[in-house]
Length: 336
Image 1 (tube, rainbow, N blue to C red):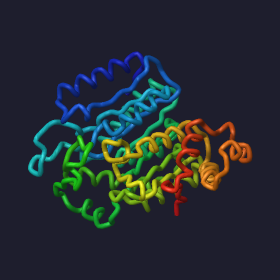
Image 2 (cartoon, helix red, strand yellow):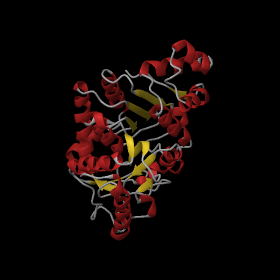
Image 3 (cartoon, rainbow, N blue to C red):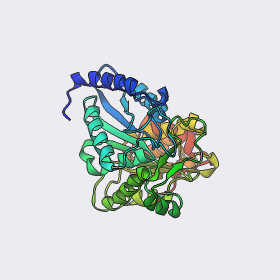
Image 4 (tube, rainbow, N blue to C red):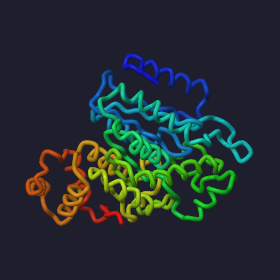
């Protein structure tokens, strides 16, 4: 797909109109575009989670837009459609990972017309797709933001069931606040992301990825934190500008961590961390050194001088370090 910037606005308008015609489950599922009337230094492409919709990235999307970035949050294939979806009539989610991969590649081309550098991010399976882009096309990706990416389930038995059963499954929290997406799905639609996660863990061993921010939570009982840490550790061996951050269990931040609507009262911490990473050039080692010394009570300005990183640290990183890393409720955990 070859696109020039003059056509981008027309493409986004066509997408808006087509979503009106096909019929969406609700307005929250509509694609979200926060776009300035000009190209920007960076453009963000955000990918929502499985069975969810673009509403998950509205708060952080607006935050990056106000920071001066263009932001795209497209509705993924088969998601967000109106219908009487149930066990006998499951939602039309793709069961071929190539459908999603071509989708994100097409959107990557669109994003490139709106900014000099592309930042890709995603939640859960959206994070898995963002990780795939970071590994397969690192030359096209400036930063990748992986919000609790799905690389495996919290319980191994769930992975086994997902691999062998063709059944319809309803989310345990299907009636939770902020759940504007589908309440259930057939397991083969999720199986393709489990397979992709396993592929990424192997691929990372021999590939240099774009710089990756891995954000997870001890309160997340949906995905495997061990596999997230393993993936980060492997990526870090060849990409030192990657960061890992895990929220402490006491904050009760669960798998759906992007919005207050989805029960994350600390939505602003996720946003601040993401902005700090995107606007900084610190390595993981430097990030750890700063975090540890601030927790010990040293001043931010003193640390910058002594570590000789004044030119690398952004205002967002300063805000996050001084306001949040000194709090006992947060942890910066070193991967195993």
